[in-house]
Image (tube, rainbow over all chains, first blue to last red):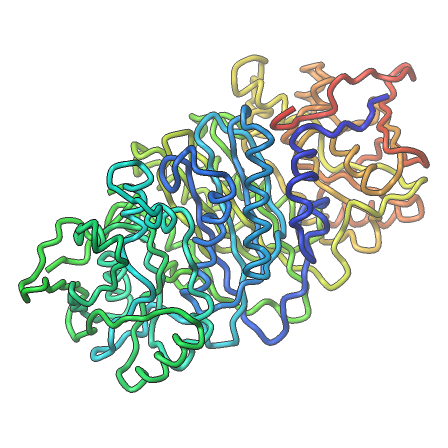
Length: 320
Length: 320
């Protein structure tokens, strides 16, 4: 007789992940989740991966790793103006990973599930001979036809961003001890992005186009230009910087570094007041940094003295 | 002026993955996919990861790696009796990965997209310092209330499996050169699973419970027993083996090895004829290997001489 064993993998799922399972997840006991999509809404779905040593530091606290994984994906929903629903996740870790890592990881997920009113729908846990490798698929919903897209920017639209730009890239340097960060503010911004959902869900009828800034402001603005068939001109002096980023004095990195997870918006001038009201209601700062123009999809950055900044590298790519 | 660069990562996505994008994927240009779920159906969703050196061999052809990734997930949909809809995928590979690998990988996806009438909805490509690490989220649909579950087996139900058992585990040994495989049949079974969707979508009203066998017959049968609150007794002599598996003479491995991706079903005796008809219609063989019984969730395997086989290890776990 073979007593039905509960090997480590399944014990871990039962202990750490089952408490996170939401409606439709069937307590993670079946091969898949089953749920009825909210009637009268479109589904919005995205997937992002995170690898130790690439997207987070190998010794980052596991609860913050989990929250960053969830939040980078939530930021994709924000970019579409969608409301979060739930997520699936695959976790590949070295066999030596201690149980405490899983406990901390699950704690981080639980904290953000409460904050964003979402739940775990399913996933998979496997071993790897390499670094911790995570993948998350986020589901959200939006009213039919109201998803924000990248292809709607028009010449004359203002270029807006939320929050402050550059903290994520500077935060990586700070977390690695390369630049001072006495308050830990920059490292905190690197480790715990703030998806701008509260504003994003108010942007229908206000923004012509939207995306999140994850690979560097100039590169991502370039993507938006290419999809919309417009050019962009931004003023370095108008890019909102945190006091810590201002002190770091690394404008180059603020323009091209990744990990901002702020929103980049195209807003026609006649919607400026509506944008300001939405930002106030959401409690999220917005700043106009430039203008979309007719022309080929180029991004021009004007320095404080009006000269054009030469940028050798548009932003972060995993293979460039 | 910063010309809008198209770094390697985005060129690869545009060249290899964009042709695979389906309706709702927005040509992979936005932060997420947007689609209207089929009306009157429930959504079924699952995610599985695959890591080189764990789930496939590092030098396996990339088209077969892609198809195995897709098919292991399709097998989860089959386990639920669902019809496939689309998928999202994250791909983490070493920076040195040649373009030909991506081309082959995309070719494999294209082949199976045609075979299973599905399309790519979104995903992410990143670098890793470790082995190739893949994650896929599959979406499917089912009529409300008709999803097959693991918790419905009742005492007296027959235990049935599709196809043949053990080829996957033996195929890994064969692919590694540890056992002979003159026709390449076993290695082929390891590298290219056959999700039993054609049968699965005909099992409503026939099977009380279902799951796919991915971590070893005995262990997975144990999961089904635990979820249903029943015991299971199977006869080794009745387990369907391929001629190649029979020749390998490794019953232990056939009982406990992973990578079968066959269906395991609980079918009441009065539905035997309906099961046979469904199997005929689907062109998929089914075999009865035992019976569910009242009692604690134990799995007993009777040897050819009627004695009880001692199994030290129920099946494959990533951390046991």
